[in-house]
Length: 155
Image 1: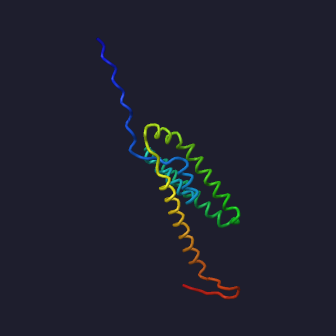
Image 2: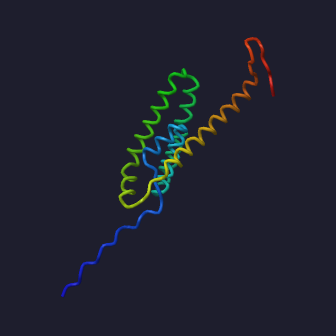
Image 3: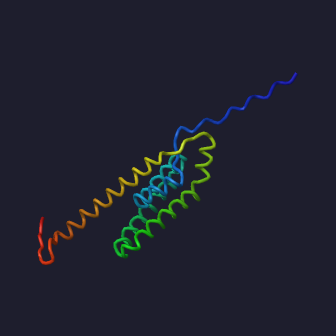
């Protein structure tokens, strides 16, 4: 008499969420590349890849700094193209670097991170960056021009 084959148990459902490429792209579009890289770093951390999480944050910070510098030096008409380019690049990077892991996570029953959270992160970081820019600009240029010949200095 043979023993029956054991019934295979499905792997446990992952208890964490991961952000897909669309969420990374949206966060980048709304809040600069650092927002998208934060989501990628969260994914890496949850997948147990701490050094890749740190690299994602460093690259996101560098690209954000370059985008802000480029945005202040280039004409405003170019800024929309830069924003779309950064969105497409972040989305492609997330899909290429993490897409297979996110797809496997979903196949195993894992959930995706909220797109609302991605949007909130992007908008929150945008507010911080714009607020910092306004503070720095007002400190370096404490003058408001009221009319064509009137100026008001404040401190």
